[in-house]
Image (cartoon, rainbow, N blue to C red; front, side):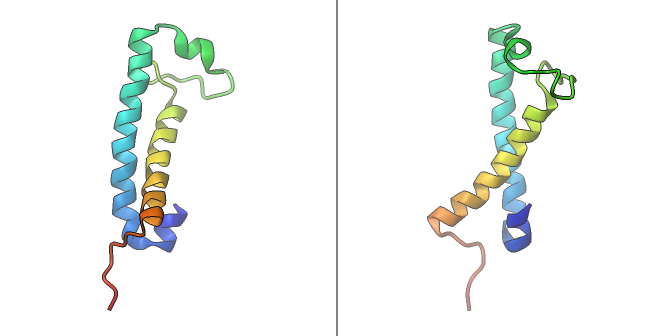
Length: 88
């Protein structure tokens, strides 16, 4: 969120990066659900979370996937010194 405030040109890239990583992370989590049944309830402390499962995945994990993708977009732009605006 701070990157969108400081660098408004990264807002759209951040949303796209968040959505892409959310999809990849959700697929990984679904792989855990499908191939290792009972793993998520055994390893995650669901009582400390909302207790709700979306397709067997805690929604907090999906939120993490989205926010991490948004964060990583800004980190990538910073470390590669890329910019979306032309400087006059």
